Length: 264
Length: 328
Picture 1 (cartoon, helix red, strand yellow):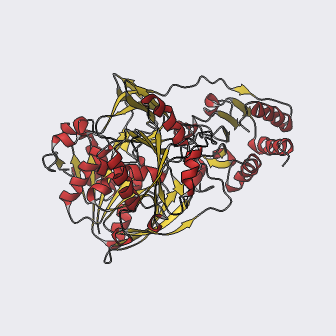
Picture 2 (cartoon, each protein chain N blue to C red; picture 1 turned 180 degrees about the horizontal axis):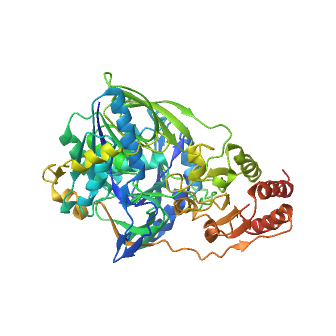
Picture 3 (cartoon, each protein chain N blue to C red; picture 1 turned 60 degrees about the vertical axis):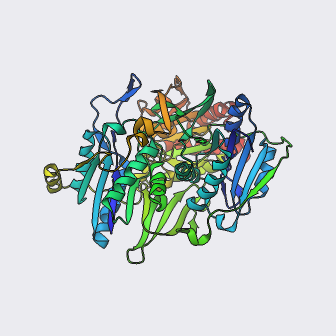
């Protein structure tokens, strides 16, 4: 089983974000592996431990994203590649998916691509399905459990987390699978792992290395642009304290308020 | 089919999903300014009655693809129909509700259509003839205005409850165009075997009222009073990450950055301190009530009504009060 894990480097979930000249900044908050992608690398490692083969991490991003790939190596991925190129700046989900597809094709002989269900910066959740379409592979998003994989028959059976419940489906490999919380408990890197990762050289791939024309990626290849980004205007709320001598009195007062609000 | 504005009607087992028609409201908000009528696209099996429902909420034309192979949503056959129909019509925009299905469908089909996708829109407007879509990013800490740069149709999913359900009773009727499935069963790589549904639970997705518990509920049994209140109010039970990670309640109830993003009319936070990651999932709720022992808990900065006290006293009292008032 050869598995590719796609990871993205994002600002920490607790980062205080600011917008300066239409660019998002996060001060000195750390950059982390997108939390959803931790479930993807953990699942890749579990499958590798079960079936053998190789787990390869790839990331598209600026040179700093090499740190996210080092985390992947530290937890046990075998190889990592950074896709970085000035021409990729301004890529939308579609251009990102195209780039990742070309990287997966360059790696070759891949059975499964794993991603987190979405990145916590752009929050689109589109990349997995787009990547699958580019590759012409099975797409299974929002997977909360991989029941079984038969590497010989090239089949996979999963449980997907849908609005109406969990959908159980079987499908053919190769597949692109996006995973969610609950599928596993991501491991922490070991001390040895961190030491090994710090010494590893992570090859850089440019778009030329992947055979992608510059016009198909970055701001020029994007189908969508985001000319304006700004802080969520917050409703000025001042809490109105509901007090009373007994829980019953508080409940009655609160019920009055909520009925007057017409939300019940 | 010269309409510039289309809607995709999300359905499950032949029934439109509760938020499916909100896409029609979003479509109406731009169609008039564009001088366009609205065409609805329905794909599935046993979905023909949805055409009349679409006319009833003000849609002008309907295109239906009805085929046994489309009984369960699978992205390949749905996207094949979607890309074929929209590739021929090439309207300006297609709007659907932001469900898991629609997200997959729009993403997959956009590659064939060579057009853009914008998900989770909370606002749509026309500026200088272009559609400007507002959506939250960075877990709702920021908003982004997005536009199509090239390709059409632009595929836009609208966040559940961001637009009101449309008025029914339009009494319209119009043309229904039938189209065939594109892929045969032998060309599909996925088979849906089963659905596992949590019985008797109201899902937090699209719920109008959510009663949510955090670390302060102290254990799995601590959710019982919350469930009782939710039941009386006809609402769903939510939870913070702390409660889910402690194993007190399944992940499907988690509200927040790594859970569900919800926007109910009423959100009652019980024993939830209100970390920024939790706020990301519920801050757009219309009315927030917080019940917490700690007067300085950050959740009170978002709350309209605050109760400092023991949730195990307040919540049952509230349940009893509403039971009386609502006659339950």
